[in-house]
Length: 500
Image: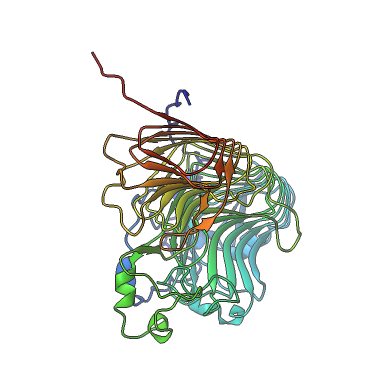
C-alpha cells in the first residue's frame, strides 16, 4: 500500500477558564479542604506501583480559604463554590456556570450509589486546581453493589480540570466507575484520575473477569462512556487497580482524544514464587484451567480503551467510535474496538507494552498513523473470521528483547487491507510471524482455526508471513519470508532498492 503517512499531530492541551485571582487574593487565612486526606496503606505489591511516566496534571493542590467555605459567590453568571455541599446545590440546575475553589476535598459516601450526579443540562463546571480524594475504606456499605463517583446524566454538560484519586487498596464496591457519562453532548476534558482499590489486584485476568471465575473480582473502571455524541478529551487515567481505564458501553458517536493511560506490569515468575495469597491457594491455576505460565508479563489492569457491544442496562448498541492521538501503556489490551459496530477509527495513537494485544479490531475500522510494540504480545489482532473491510496502517516500535510470544499480528476475515512497517531497521525480529487465517487469543494460548480471504497484506518488516490452510485469495507483498499453505494466494517479495 503506497500511502503517505501524515505527521503525528501534537497533543492539544485544552486551557481551562481563568481562576478568580482577585477573589482569592483577599483571603489570607490558612487553607484547609472539606476533609483531611487519608493516607494510602501500602499493599503487598506496592513496589509495582511505579510513578507515572509523566506527572503533568497530577500535582496535588491543597488549600480552600475558610472565608469562602460553604459560600456561593456570583460573578458574571459564574457561581464560585468552596464546598461539596455548595456544589451539590447546582448539580440539577439547567444552565449552571460553576467554578470550584482550588483545593483538595474528600468525597465521602452519601447513601447513594452515585456520589455526585450532574443532572442539569447546558451547564459548565470548572474544577481547575480541584482534587477529589476518595478513601476506599469508607465505602464498605457498597461492597456488594455498584458505585459511581461522578455521573453526568444531563445533556450538554462540560466538566473540566478535575483531579480525582482513590486512596487505599480496599475495593469501593463490587463494580465501580470513577466517571460515568450517560447523557448527550457531554464533554469531559483536562481530567486526571489515579485509581486504586480492587480485588484481587496483582494477578491480572488469571482468575477470571466475571462471576464464573475462580475468584469473583471487584473491579474499578476509570471513565465509562455511554450516551450519544459524548467526548473525553485530554484526560489521564493511571490504573493501579483491576478494571478498564476507558470503557464504552452503549456509546454512539463518541470521541476519545488526546488521552494518556498507564497500567502496571508484573512478571509471572514473581507470582509463581509466592508462598501465600490467592494464587498460591489456587495452586497457581488460571480460570481457563492451565497453570499460570512462567516467563511472561501480565498487566494488573484490563484494557486501556475498550468498547463493549451494548449498554447492559439500556441495551443501546455501541457504534461509530473515534479514538485520536491517545497513548496507552502497560494495559492488557491497548485499544479494543472489536466489539463496536458501525464505522470506527483509530488515528495517531501509540500503544506500548501490552499484555495481550496492542490493537484489537474487527469490521469497518480504520487504524491510521498509529504505532505499537510487540514486546509482550502481538501488535494487531483482526480476530474474527466474519470481520470485514478494515484498513490498517501500523508502525511497529522497538520490540527487541521480546518475551513470552513470537507473533507480530493475526489477521482473519474478509476484505481487509493491512500494512505493517518498522519504525527503524532492527526493531522487528525475523523470529516473529504474521499469521493469516489463524486466531490467537493471547500469548501462551493454543491457536484456533479460522479463515481469511480477499485480503491485501503489505509486510515491510522482517517477520515471516504464514498463510494457513484456510487463507484464500490473499495478496501479499512482504519483506520477510512467506509460507503459503492456503489456496489461490498471490505472493510477492518486497526488495529494497539500493540507494545511489
